[in-house]
Length: 83
Image (cartoon, rainbow, N blue to C red; front, side, top):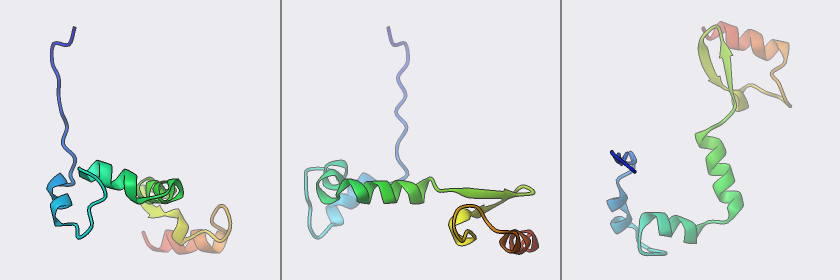
């Protein structure tokens, strides 16, 4: 049996949906499901949870520093200089 139920609100105010010029559904959640293809969702998910680099406790976005794959040594030198 559930003794306690907690609802954690999003930091996005769902009422913003009322400001949309074109509404593709009955709610913000429904609008998003009716507006995008799966590849759009995947790319947005990546932006919200992307690869990062930790250099001595400083966090950097990996995409800004990688050529192909992991950062090369000259890119790591650049990252260390940003400390």
